[in-house]
Image (cartoon, rainbow, N blue to C red; front, side):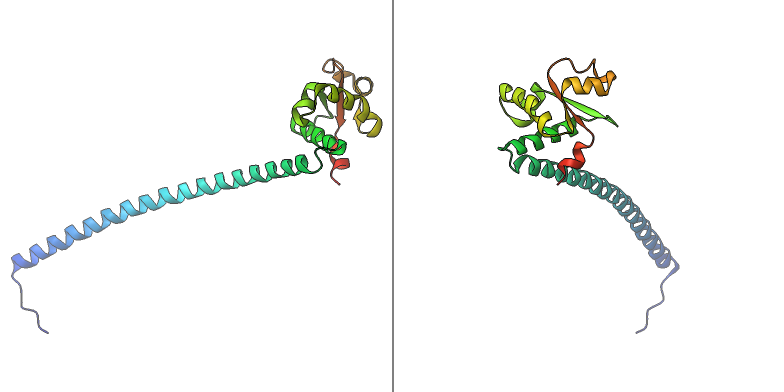
Length: 162
């Protein structure tokens, strides 16, 4: 197949048309590259957010398992109280104070039963301290422990993770 020779004007016109097409293609390629970069950044953000949400969901499911497993029994209440104490722990706190109001909040028991738990649990679990035991153990906690309450030592985590 032979191609007819073109005039200089036709070649110039063809060249300009090709240049316009190349420029248009480069502009589209730049726009696509920019879109792809933004999309990659957004995908990374979404993956990070997804990982964070999965971790939070796992933590919530673990808490729900603690709360569900025998939550109506006294041992279930102890697990709920310990989970609440762990949630209230800040930093390397040696003990966490759980008063009746906090026990009612984490277990859903009546205030009267919360006081019964405060009275009974230190007798049943060596790692739960009464107010006076907590004061004896750590005089710095005495100012914080004003009302009848329980104090959970950090060994509570090891004991309850059976």
